[in-house]
Image 1 (cartoon, rainbow, N blue to C red):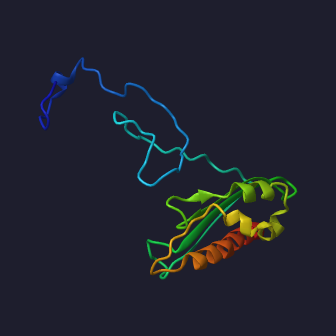
Image 2: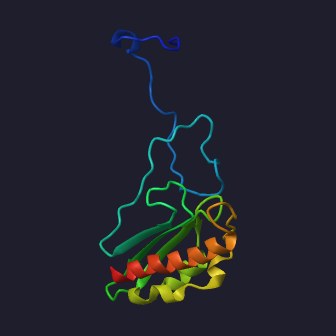
Image 3: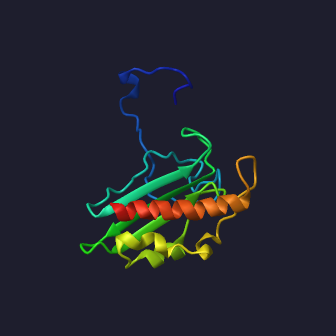
Length: 163
């Protein structure tokens, strides 16, 4: 064993085993702020993001007091995969800054499947926001954030329809 901070030459390292004891892959799960499924003896070495196919469209919109404000009032990310007839075959919609971690909207995502790309914004319902619990603070009230989230979701979906 080498003492901490001590440098070792190649002759000292010859024959020693280095590397990871094991490798595992886990899907990214957003469940709570500052929580992870990483074990104490593990190190995250990569985040693997799948490449999008040619029929995938994505959109990101945010509301903030300034263009470069790090802390958003509300933000929305949306992605759809389309078939050759421009109908949605897969969808993901997430809202940030309205819960402790970004929250997906599974009911809306399910409703978008089968819709034509140009009419996605019409599918947004008030009930889609029921899983959000925004705070009231100096940037806005909870009611304002919910209204802003609905508007930003529609804007993000409209952008996906415009291609």
